[in-house]
Image (cartoon, rainbow, N blue to C red; front, side, top):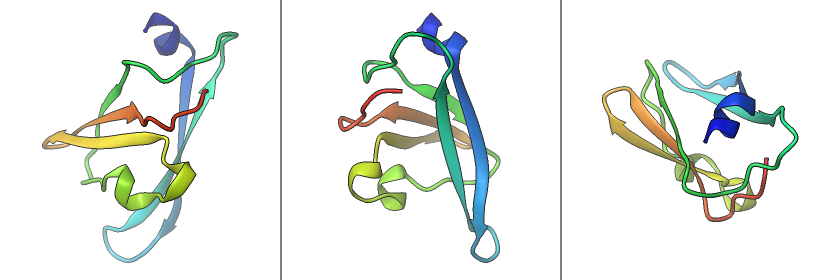
Length: 87
């Protein structure tokens, strides 16, 4: 876990707006360390002011590498999907 916390960088970009309160964010993960980050028992918890849709409703097929779960209020959990490759 310490390796992920120290070496994982996330970039978030708004890809497009589709009316009031609807947009698509593209999140890119960068491993800035030497070791490979594999799927496993790890998750990223975060907050969002806006209500987010689940990853299953946003992606189809092989692009689904993460599961987005709404916990409560603006609190979310992002976990690697069973199809997760490596970072």
